[in-house]
Image (tube, rainbow, N blue to C red; front, side, top):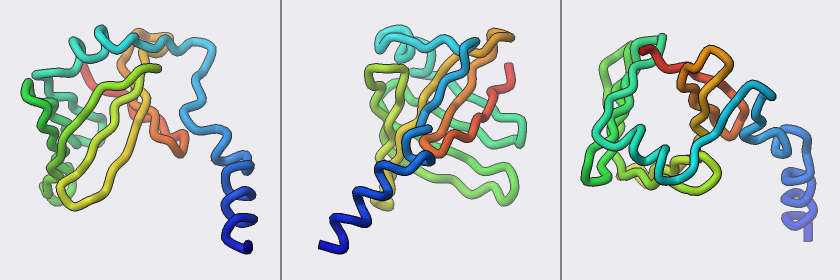
Length: 118
């Protein structure tokens, strides 16, 4: 019973409701366009981190600070989202949009925005 109440409060909280909140100036992708934009590409972020989307669905993220790498598999979803299942069992879904400056931006479920360097 307590777990049910706690989960209800969590999912009703403003933080959860703000997941993938888009700005008026953001433009999303359809599944085919986002897949074409990412598959076979390397995205470099302003902190130096890099996301690599392999043609066969593999995914890696290389951290800028220590050079460590996370390995997984990605799937492009509807509503401009990409979900990644990491080999360590962790998974995440992020939204990919273009902003008012026509930059590609990754938005996490927590609402954090990470623009991609061109």
